[in-house]
Amino acid sequence: QVQLVESGGGLVQPGGSLRLSCVTSGFTFSTWWMYWARQAPGKGLEWVSRISPYSKQKGYTDSVKGRFTVSRDNANNTLYLQMNDLKSEDTAIYYCSKGANYGDPLSRGQGTQVTVSS
Image (cartoon, rainbow, N blue to C red; front, top):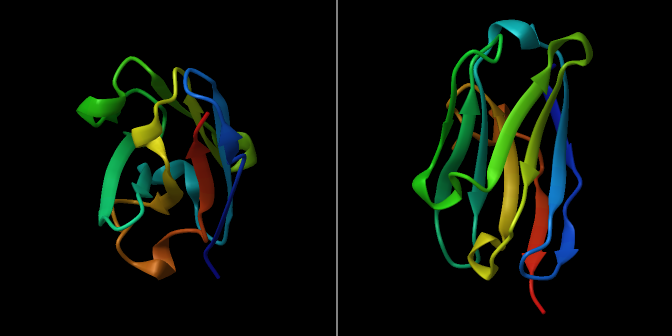
Protein backbone atom coordinates (compact mmCIF):
# COMPACT_ATOMS: atom_id res chain seq x y z
CA GLN A 1 0.00 0.00 0.00
CA VAL A 2 1.00 3.64 -0.30
CA GLN A 3 3.35 4.72 2.48
CA LEU A 4 4.96 8.09 3.11
CA VAL A 5 7.18 8.63 6.14
CA GLU A 6 8.37 12.12 7.01
CA SER A 7 11.34 12.85 9.24
CA GLY A 8 13.77 15.61 10.08
CA GLY A 9 11.59 17.91 12.13
CA GLY A 10 12.54 19.31 15.50
CA LEU A 11 13.04 22.41 17.59
CA VAL A 12 15.14 25.14 16.01
CA GLN A 13 15.84 28.78 16.81
CA PRO A 14 14.67 31.56 14.49
CA GLY A 15 17.07 31.87 11.60
CA GLY A 16 18.02 28.22 11.80
CA SER A 17 17.69 25.44 9.24
CA LEU A 18 16.16 22.01 8.96
CA ARG A 19 16.00 19.43 6.20
CA LEU A 20 12.88 17.32 6.00
CA SER A 21 12.80 13.96 4.26
CA CYS A 22 9.90 11.87 3.04
CA VAL A 23 10.58 8.25 2.20
CA THR A 24 7.87 6.69 0.05
CA SER A 25 6.79 3.25 -1.12
CA GLY A 26 3.82 1.50 -2.68
CA PHE A 27 3.52 3.68 -5.79
CA THR A 28 5.60 4.76 -8.77
CA PHE A 29 7.23 7.79 -7.13
CA SER A 30 8.91 9.05 -10.30
CA THR A 31 5.60 9.59 -12.09
CA TRP A 32 3.94 11.76 -9.46
CA TRP A 33 4.05 15.42 -8.58
CA MET A 34 4.93 15.53 -4.90
CA TYR A 35 3.80 18.12 -2.39
CA TRP A 36 4.74 19.45 1.00
CA ALA A 37 1.96 20.89 3.12
CA ARG A 38 1.81 22.09 6.71
CA GLN A 39 -0.68 22.65 9.46
CA ALA A 40 0.05 25.27 12.08
CA PRO A 41 -1.60 25.11 15.51
CA GLY A 42 -5.27 26.05 15.22
CA LYS A 43 -5.10 26.50 11.45
CA GLY A 44 -5.98 24.51 8.35
CA LEU A 45 -3.68 22.66 5.99
CA GLU A 46 -1.57 24.95 3.81
CA TRP A 47 0.26 24.01 0.63
CA VAL A 48 3.97 24.81 0.99
CA SER A 49 5.79 23.44 -2.04
CA ARG A 50 5.50 21.10 -4.99
CA ILE A 51 7.81 19.46 -7.47
CA SER A 52 7.22 17.80 -10.83
CA PRO A 53 8.21 14.17 -11.48
CA TYR A 54 11.66 14.99 -12.91
CA SER A 55 12.22 18.19 -10.93
CA LYS A 56 11.82 20.51 -13.90
CA GLN A 57 9.06 22.47 -12.21
CA LYS A 58 8.97 23.62 -8.63
CA GLY A 59 6.55 25.86 -6.79
CA TYR A 60 6.38 27.56 -3.41
CA THR A 61 3.83 29.44 -1.44
CA ASP A 62 4.78 33.11 -1.17
CA SER A 63 5.69 33.00 2.51
CA VAL A 64 8.54 30.50 1.96
CA LYS A 65 9.95 31.65 -1.39
CA GLY A 66 13.68 32.22 -1.18
CA ARG A 67 13.95 30.28 2.10
CA PHE A 68 12.73 26.76 1.28
CA THR A 69 13.96 24.44 -1.46
CA VAL A 70 12.18 21.28 -2.55
CA SER A 71 14.04 18.40 -4.18
CA ARG A 72 13.62 14.72 -4.87
CA ASP A 73 15.62 11.56 -5.46
CA ASN A 74 13.67 9.32 -7.77
CA ALA A 75 16.20 6.49 -7.47
CA ASN A 76 15.46 6.29 -3.75
CA ASN A 77 11.79 7.34 -3.80
CA THR A 78 12.52 10.22 -1.45
CA LEU A 79 11.31 13.81 -1.27
CA TYR A 80 13.16 16.58 0.57
CA LEU A 81 12.47 20.07 1.86
CA GLN A 82 15.43 22.24 2.83
CA MET A 83 14.22 25.00 5.11
CA ASN A 84 16.50 27.95 5.83
CA ASP A 85 16.04 31.19 7.78
CA LEU A 86 13.18 29.64 9.71
CA LYS A 87 10.66 31.93 11.36
CA SER A 88 8.22 31.37 14.21
CA GLU A 89 5.37 31.35 11.71
CA ASP A 90 6.89 28.25 10.11
CA THR A 91 5.97 26.27 13.22
CA ALA A 92 3.67 23.48 12.06
CA ILE A 93 3.33 19.81 11.34
CA TYR A 94 4.77 19.20 7.89
CA TYR A 95 3.34 16.54 5.61
CA CYS A 96 4.40 15.15 2.26
CA SER A 97 1.78 13.95 -0.14
CA LYS A 98 1.42 12.00 -3.34
CA GLY A 99 -0.05 14.51 -5.71
CA ALA A 100 -2.12 17.43 -4.52
CA ASN A 101 -4.13 15.20 -2.20
CA TYR A 102 -2.57 16.47 1.00
CA GLY A 103 -6.05 16.86 2.49
CA ASP A 104 -6.56 13.10 2.27
CA PRO A 105 -4.91 11.26 5.17
CA LEU A 106 -4.49 8.22 2.89
CA SER A 107 -2.32 10.23 0.50
CA ARG A 108 0.03 11.79 3.02
CA GLY A 109 2.37 10.71 5.78
CA GLN A 110 1.97 11.03 9.51
CA GLY A 111 3.81 14.33 9.53
CA THR A 112 6.87 15.71 11.27
CA GLN A 113 6.72 18.54 13.82
CA VAL A 114 8.75 21.68 13.18
CA THR A 115 8.94 24.15 16.03
CA VAL A 116 10.74 27.47 15.60
CA SER A 117 11.31 29.15 18.92
CA SER A 118 14.01 30.87 20.92
